[in-house]
Image: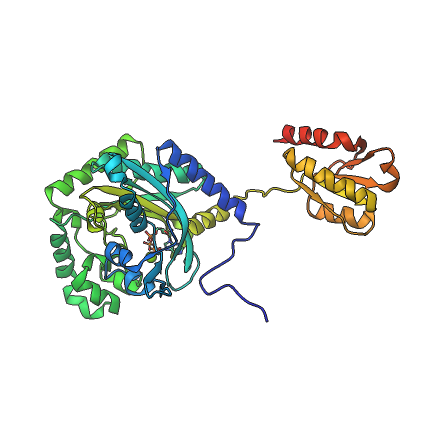
Length: 422
Ligand code: ATP
Ligand code: MG
């Protein structure tokens, strides 16, 4: 009997992890430049947190959550996104009372019961950030700049930043009306989801993944005309700050986000390389969520990007990050040599040298073959007859050259070579 990974999940194998680590490292570096601090929240939360935070008629709440009861009958849910939990943790730790500005970033697995396809999984990984306490347009632009710099640092090419405004509780009703009156005549032709959304949240029709629904949006008037004066000024100001930060962007008047908590600015980072799953990153402002989740009325803005999609893009560009290989492979030949070699592994690893050992009872040729398969840079051969001289042969696997080196000197000499290389 063999097992396979559950549908919609995948293993990230050692050939791929160096690229993941590379993106994660770049994210960490760029977040530091922008004064963000890492926060880690649980993988599951009370179901209610997401119901309250994400919005009842979003796809996530309606049909995508992994919800279960624990042994005491509590309803818990594997997190489908990061923001609600970060807001919860931010409030629970009283940071809102201690710091006027909080900039938090996170990374981790998210879970959504979606139809698996390229770039779309049921367990996937996001890196994201949230800024609490700044309502001005500058912060929106800075958050977009953070995303942009992060992708540039990771070497992602040909990305496009799209921005839009989805208004606020003052003007949202007008936006909704505009969409409803435009789509009304074709309501019966829309997909089932959109017919439901039409009444409750017509903005979400703009985000429908069904191409047939998209056809009925052709000719939709520019919704920015329906924004209130405050939202319009804010949006213009975001453009100005993006220009000031020398950031290229496109206004996409159709852009809305899948979660209900957004207000004013929304944005996405898109790639032409990803096919149907073309969004790498999405985010925006959510000025009502903190209050909605029981906190004070505090403005907030953030984004999240998908690591699978970022890594897919890098692979598509031919990027590869080599993993670490053993720098030295110890090949003892005989019982006494084995004991010496075990001691040497400890010395070498303590000295910072990636080390591997082959204690198998077999000949030199077989052991050399393994060392070369594992791409060791050096091997150190200790035969029983060299042992009385307290030395072994250090073989350079690249040049084939060989030199006699004392057991006592090996760690220091090899550590020096390794440091020189790095
Ligand atoms: P999409 O429109 O592709 O469904 P979304 O609007 O649901 O994305 P968000 O919830 O804003 O996405 O999440 C931000 C990012 O997380 C996305 O841009 C994408 O890169 C990634 N992401 C979202 N859902 C998945 C998934 N099921 N599998 C892999 N990555 C995902
Ligand atoms: Mg989605």
